[in-house]
Amino acid sequence: MKQIPIAKPIVGRSEIRAVKRVMKSGSLAQGSEVARFEAEFSKFVMDRECVAVNSGTSALHIALISLGIGFGDEVLVPSFTFAATANCVALTGATPVFIDIDPDTYNMNSDLIEPAITSKTKAILVVHLFGLPADMIKISAIAKRNNLLIVEDAAQAHLASIEEKNVGTFGDAAAFSFYPTKNMTTGEGGMVVLNDAQVARSCRLLRNQGMEKRYQNEIVGFNLRMTDIHAAIGLEQLKNLEKWTDIRIENASFLSERLPTGLAPIKPLGFKHVFHQYTIRLKKYRDEISSNLTKMGIGNSIYYPTQVHTLPSFNLRQELLETRLATEQVLSLPVHPSVSKKDLLRIVSSVVKSVEMYK
Image (cartoon, rainbow, N blue to C red; front, side, top):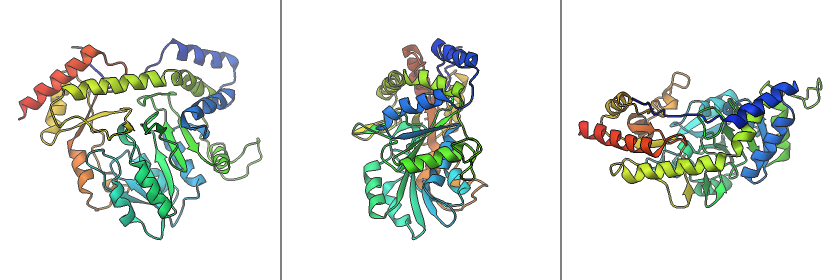
């Protein structure tokens, strides 16, 4: 039986040729390819400043540092996300303050933000989970009223938008990921997107041992550079990003039209969901249905099975009801561009049969 994987990076001949070209040049570290990749990516985020780094986590980490977030500050974050979101806050010395989610979108519940703000609150770290933008119109208004920074974790949301305004352009900074399972990849890599040239310069210093000119270290920095090899892959991937995004949206629509009522993810009016993950909700027997789908050759995964705030690294006993329910009920299905129409029909049929088994 053919297995339909939950994710599948697309790497073609053009990416291979680009890597070979860079390898033959002998210039492998951060250089002209990285600069080109930053310039090309900037076109998708309203020509904002872009700084390429070695991972999405690095992008988020140095974005927070460059904005001045550190010891004594609080940053509002969702708990239903990958742990890296909160980790990056903690690594600056600031305290992540966890906010519950909207049960329909899985994103931070904007109605719960203002009650959580204290005199120590410095920023709102928004995650555009699964490729669906958070409620940025309302969140932006809250941030403005309370003089707070906005940082967007857009690791899963390349080309997602609200009323045709792309994510990564709402806040003071944003972080994208190019991990192999993301909507585009560089193998490993990330991008910081910023609306301020001075903050962007700080990020460039932080990624390169605190220096722009060799041996002239201005601050204490890291080694978070992206290589020209990875950037060359990214440049080729960008050429197909819009096409791949359209296919993801088409595949998601196909599934939503055919799956049992109440399972399909919700997309608010005016929001462009780019479906990094196609996540259904099973209020009963989620784990059993997941196991059965695996036996039927349907790749699936639980994003996410844990509440970040309850992990040993944070160990908080805070009750976030909707976050807890989501960890118990969500299940993601294949939606990537390599999924064929025949595959989609198999996915629908398998989900229907599995759900019926446990009624």
